Amino acid sequence: MSNWIDVAARDAVPADDVIGVEVAGRDIALYDVEGELYATDNLCTHGRARMCDGFLEGHEIECPLHQGRFDVRDGKALCAPLTENLRCYPVRVEGGRVWLAVE
Ligand code: FES
Image (cartoon, rainbow, N blue to C red; front, side, top):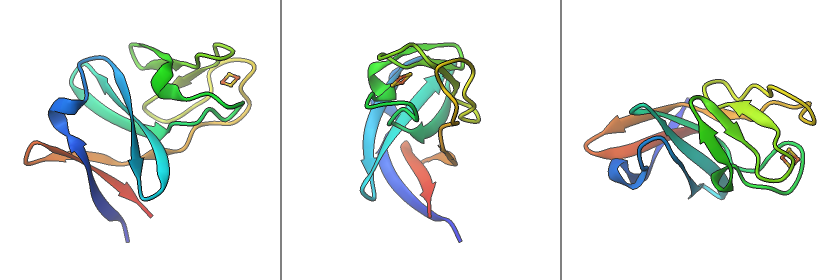
């Protein structure tokens, strides 16, 4: 069963931007894309770079280190040098707070 955790105020995620949050010992990236929220692992699957330091354009986050791109909706790796997708987490907004489901 999913375990929903309150991770941030909704207002803490700026419009069309990404922030990093620590949830249950995990480093997670939270994205706002046109008012919708998405969450993935923050650490790139290719190297030691964090998505929250990357560049978000539409639904694509570009890694700051080698410019690999992922789709924030499903974590899919979209181009070289990436070979592994990012893990995604279910997100919901309730009472002005952002909740994430982590196992
Ligand atoms: Fe992210 Fe290389 S560390 S693309």
